[in-house]
Length: 253
Image (cartoon, rainbow, N blue to C red):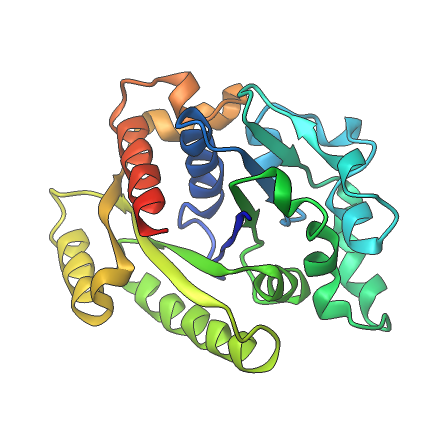
C-alpha cells in the first residue's frame, strides 16, 4: 500500500511545487513508483514536467468531479516510474462547483483509493491556500510534508498550516500525521537562514528533515525546461539535496 503525502504550505514561494516534483522524481530514480497529483489550479507541477495544460484532456478536475475512472487521467512522464495527474484550466472553478456536493471533503480520498495499489508514493501538490482543494488533499493523505523557506515570515505560515493539520485530523482524518518539515531555499551565508533553521529544529525536533534544500539557480531553471532537477543537472547541489531528502523520506517509513 502506498504512502499518500500532501505537500502543503499556504504561503506561496516556499518551494512547495519544486519539492513535490523533485522528491517524486528522486524517489522514481530510487526505483519507487510515484504518482504526483497537481491539485493547484496554477498547474506549475504540470508545466514543470513539460506538459501543456491546454492539451490535457483530463486531469484532477475530472478526478474530483467523479467523471474519471482514475486510470484515464494518469500521464507518463520523462521518468519511467513517475506518473502525473495534471491540473487543467478547468480546476480553477472546482471549489465553486463543489459547494453543494455531498461529502465534498472526501472526493479526492475516494478517487485515489483505486490507484493506491499501483504506487509506493502518491504526492498531492496543493495550492498556496487552505481552501477546499488543500482540505481535500489532507483528508485523503496519510501525512503532510511542509516545505519551509528559511525566512522570518515563514514561521508564521508554519503555525497556520500546523493548526490546519490538527483541525483536519480532529474533524476529517484521524490518521493524518506530520510527515516532516523540509527546510528550503537555505543559504548558509545568511544568518537569518541559520537562525530560522535552528529555531524550527528546536521546536519540532525529529520532524525536521536533516537534509536542507539550498538556494540553487539550477533548481529555478529546471521547470522552464520541463524537467525535474535530476534530469536537468544531476550534479547540481539542488539535485543532490533532493536525492538526499528522498533517501531520508524512505528511511522515515
